[in-house]
Length: 282
Ligand code: SF4
Image (cartoon, rainbow, N blue to C red; front, side):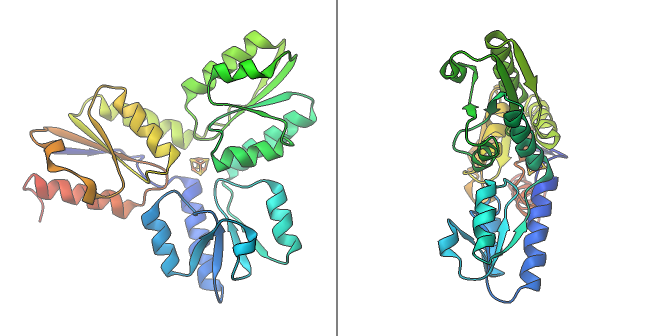
């Protein structure tokens, strides 16, 4: 069995940066360090961080220490202001690319555009960007959501960093039909689109595709959807423990990719598991 692992599988720049920030902060801090929500969407990494006394909290009232890390998704600015008012030390690990989307949303709102954010309504990154547009933006999961806009003359568009280019284009196209003036900032992160393209390309030439990452990770779920759309049987798993040997029975080539919050050790473990299954590993 040939195992093809995507070069772009696993941690992206922003996640690496957030994890390193958490490790550094844990080493320099006595007592507990909190992250607002899980630092990344990967339960295995989150539980490793817990061993280092880095724990997720759902709100500021749950803080047990005095240090709070803002994860790469970012948060509404009011959350940081509130924490600082309470005397909490805030370490902001918002990914610079997410920060860019926040800043453009704010700028568009100030310039008088009706802001449209292309992304998932419930995603924390989108909720953060929404707050930077003073809460008046519309979140479009797809072009039909723009039917809610009503009459509007100027639309400004930004994207959730992990949305797909196709979805972004569909929404922008609809905006052009609706408004006389449309200003577009493509804030899709390259890490995502490059990973997506490579995953699709690999999925197109293997018998089975494994997509590794948290079941609660939006970017991993989208990777799995893209791979599945090539017609190749695709399985979204968190660890090698979920692999059913029947999935890869008789497969000549198995492809592997992983979401932005999947650590290298999980990828290596899945490769080792497949090698053992095919009788070439220890
Ligand atoms: S996917 Fe891109 S925007 Fe999101 S955290 Fe990673 S580098 Fe930053």
